[in-house]
Length: 197
Ligand SMILES: Cc1cc2nc3c(=O)[nH]c(=O)nc-3n(C[C@H](O)[C@H](O)[C@H](O)COP(=O)(O)OP(=O)(O)OC[C@H]3O[C@@H](n4cnc5c(N)ncnc54)[C@H](O)[C@@H]3O)c2cc1C
Image 1 (cartoon, rainbow, N blue to C red):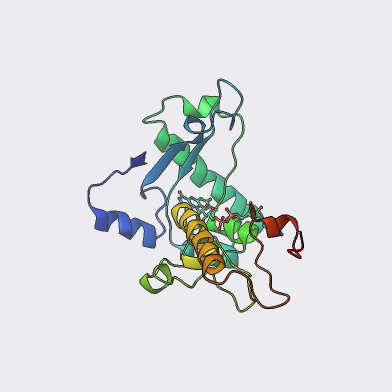
Image 2 (image 1 turned 90 degrees about the horizontal axis):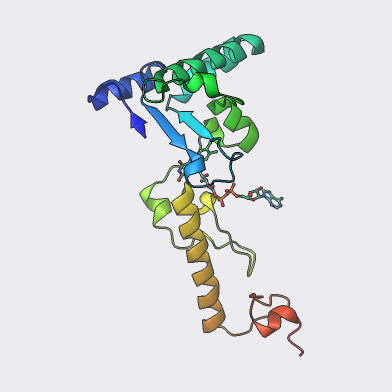
C-alpha cells in the first residue's frame, strides 16, 4: 500500500531530494500475506519503507558519529510507525521485533553502490542487451539482477533468457571443442560429462 499525503508528485519528489523523510511517500507491505511462514501464527512481518536521496545518508555517513546515526535512524523509523498508525491503529503496541535499514545498511550488506536496492540502472541499452548473459569464458553464462538491470522481475526474466540462450547454443552446436563440453541438467551428457556412456 502506498500512502501519500499529497497528490502533487512534484512535492513528493521535492521531499525525496531534500531529505524530508517525514513527508515522503510511505510504503506499507505485509509480507505475511504472501508467505504465512514469515512469522509465527497470529503474527505478521510488516515492512514500512520510503524513498530518500542517497545524499541524505551520505551526509550522515560523513558527519554523524555512529551513536547519533543509530539514534536518528530509530527516530525516523518510529515516525514511520506513527504515520502508519493512521491506517493501522495500535501498530506500535504490537511490535515485538523491529529492524531498521537505511541505504547505508544495504550498501554495507550487499555492496550495492550507494545502497541501491535494484542494482544497475535499468537503462534501455542494458535492458535490450540480449548478450548480457554471455561471458568471455566458453559455456559460462550469467543470470540475475546484474545482467540486464535490477529488480525481481528482471532477475527472473534474465534467468529465462539465459536458459533459452543455453538451449539455443546446445541445439545449434551439438557438441563442441575439447575442454568446453556444454553440460545441461537432463542431458545424458550431464550425468556422464565425458559423454562416454
Ligand atoms: C531491501 C530490498 C528491497 C527490494 N525490494 C524490491 C522490490 O520491491 N521489487 C523488486 O523488483 N526488487 C526489489 N529488490 C531487488 C531484488 O530483490 C533483487 O534485484 C533480486 O533479488 C536480485 O536477484 P538475483 O537472483 O540477481 O540475486 P539475489 O536475490 O541476491 O540472489 C543471489 C543468491 O546467491 C547467493 N550467493 C551469493 N554468493 C554465493 C556463493 N558464493 N555461493 C552460493 N550462493 C551464493 C545469495 O545468498 C543469494 O541467495 C529489493 C532489494 C532489497 C535489498
